[in-house]
Length: 522
Image (cartoon, rainbow, N blue to C red; front, top):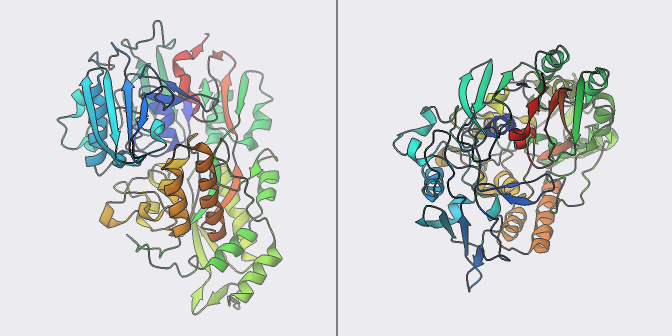
């Protein structure tokens, strides 16, 4: 089967790439201890059960401040090279995450004090805190036998061809062309996967993927957009899968100075002012963008957590050009002869960056150029490839990590437990700097004690209702500060030729989550 992806991942391993498309490919080969099903419920993958307080797999200490989690592993599981998968691999994964500076995120793993492996099929995780979202950790496991002697894993074959226990094994990564995954003969599920091989074909845009799908050159494609659906629906040889998504398209402001390794405490001369950020929000016609560019099939965004038990009931203020102008007038931003405002010698001129090859995002940028000029703000477009902008890698030069951008536009999706997303992106300790080797994903450089305290509270109790209230408090405060404009909530749209079967959409995972069930009739 040939499956089109219109962004190429910088790496397939999600330890070394934060791009959504990396996870799409990684699902072919990499597995974790537990995963999330389409209903948002955890289910065991390499573990025999999902640990919980109720079943005794998770135990809170007598003082209520620490947590021990025991994973019983499925016996007899093998890596794709035939070597046994054991609890030693779980411990090695944790140790590697802590010591490798090129790992994308250490969220939650730094809360682990130690891991015991009393036998090959038991791993006991000792948390030094009451880390509530423990079930989200170890969503991927590294093979100790393959990597323990590598001085720098990021320079090995592993990031681009990660070995796993999943239904396929990545056998080829041809940059700019394709990634090949072949059937894993050691996969533990009898007679699966059904496919012998899946080729992830790299194409430059969604539009190219659609053309190849209609021509039968590919069997399926990832991440269709609403604007492309009406034309594709006319093709009798194509089926479109629509799934309720949890992704939110947004514009993030860098509130610190736009400079290499920026000081988080510095102030962006334009975007560092609340009045300016509010004005840009008021001057952003979310509903018009949805109606004109997405055929009215999306919803205005209000929060990064749009679905699930933790989703707050928030409304980010809507389009009001008069209000935008009024806010800037009162804040002392004065229009010049070219109608662009300035204040204290600083011109209201900023840049926006998104992924190249995304026609809809480029159209949104053009709308913003026009709309923001009407309130006296000049916007310049500077787009770059996804594998740079969305790599979430300091070494790969992600400008959000380094602080060398004014604003960026992209989408991201939280897990059913949103803690990693909210903690990594909006708390003060998660601001990437040269001093911490770019660790953290707080790209707006927002620093607020209300957010910090609320997120810490949400992550340190297993009472779900208390956690929900705490997240709502943090996200309400986030909207008050306006470091981000939530554009719209996205549907998940994929398309397949009518001779492809077995796929199933999921709000909480990418389309390839059940790749072992896919098959093609020729």
